[in-house]
Amino acid sequence: MAHHTKTQMTTNQITTQTNTGTPDLSLQSAQTDARKYFNNFYSGFFNISAEANDAITAFFEEYTQNKTAAKNLAASVIYTAQAQNIDPLTILSDFQRLPKGQLNSYLVAFLNINRVPTSVLGLKESTKTSPYITRTILL
Image (cartoon, rainbow, N blue to C red; front, side, top):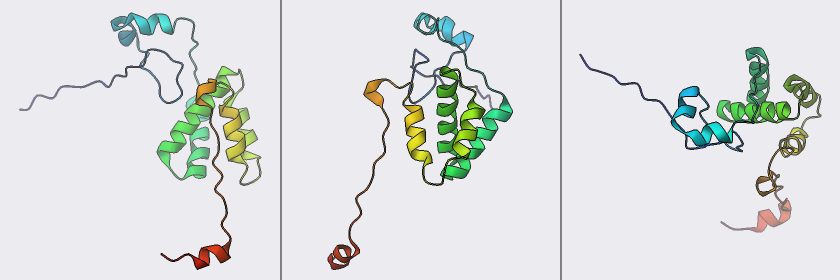
């Protein structure tokens, strides 16, 4: 009979202030690294109902057609909304009312509210090439 050991994923982040991921804030993790405890001492814990989380994630799944991207966008929107003391479902309803094609601009502006200036998000607009020029380019 084979013996299986359970492995636990850990992260080396020591603060909840992050732009890309979330640290392990479990009690066991905090007890093993005092820096995590003290760096997160004044940080608030953000809680959201499963229904609200699922609604926001489903909206972004439909928008992005990618489950991983949807989860990351949903988490970012929830974190930003709660950091600003705004109900995440209010933000979702605002996003749902936007005309098609305008969500990216509003999403970038919303997510930049809490970001540090060194990691501000932006949009890349590609230049449109004239079809007459494209037609003359040989491959």
